[in-house]
Length: 200
Picture (cartoon, rainbow, N blue to C red):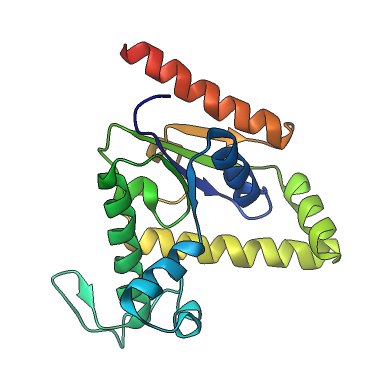
């Protein structure tokens, strides 16, 4: 993997996708962007991070939002556009990186260096992961999974013309229920290598 490679990871809640993406970036020695991109943006804009966190990844109420030429006056829409600009700037810089969420596979669609991945899992697998991580009951885990999945879906589908989790929107869609995190990481790396070899 000599040339620039950008790996955009989408995931269902409870799959451990964030941790997989972080480990993938570490293994490849790529930069890793998730919530920390908000900190970088806030520093460049000289704004308080705490004021921004509350708005991140929320979907504004269209009844109270004024939109013109695809720009909105609501803080969550402004923040989303700043994040998308940040992603485009990093892609244009030539660096290789792994990014979680933020509609990255849509923002960078058409970029030849982009590899988009969506991680999903069986219900039992995700419930087990969430109950263990938060020490909660199965019913509470199910409610948490549904809440977070719905939030991600609303955010993604608001800012992208492609549906969240639709396999046609990603290069690689994986049910990781029967794989270890290391196996998932190796599968993604092998896919990238196979694709690079086919282009040589």
